[in-house]
Image 1: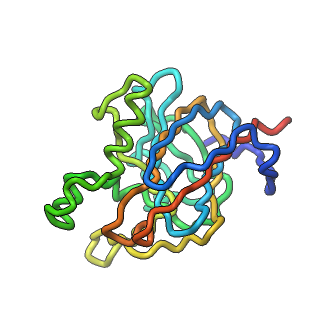
Image 2: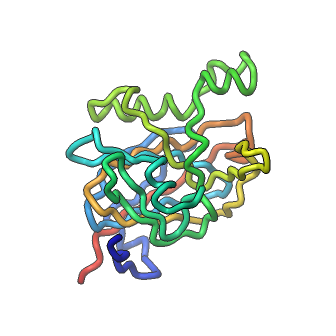
Length: 217
């Protein structure tokens, strides 16, 4: 495996080439070029940020949760994790993280899963899968292109039975995760609208995304 790209420990927001607040419950997407650094900030704390990555010039290559977990031999995304594609290549690396262990097994909420978990009365509530579908269609993709995702800042412990639990988030206001792109990638985010379990503290809030150019050699 290649060595980690050297990334400074501190960054000034004023030096970012892109700075955007994703409203609560909404989707977002943006191209991150190779060598650029993407920071996702949990502005208010305890907000799950469902995230997908696609190779910018070939969307058929996309983030693979299975390959990522197999490559690192761990159940969670943490500092140092290499985010792998379905072609076995590194798409990005986590180079800084104050938000704890991030889930990449529980997937995205959907209207269908909400109905199964919480009852038919929640069927028409907005969900991450719908956010993803709306956003990827802007780039010529469809719901078939929505793959298993990362849930940044979502606390999903593995119980002794092997089941996944969704419990109160541990991230604090201002916690962040920082990634350096190892290829040109399209990042797609659903700022999770879930209100039926504690992944968002039962109160979805905005998050912030910043991008910095590649550090000079």
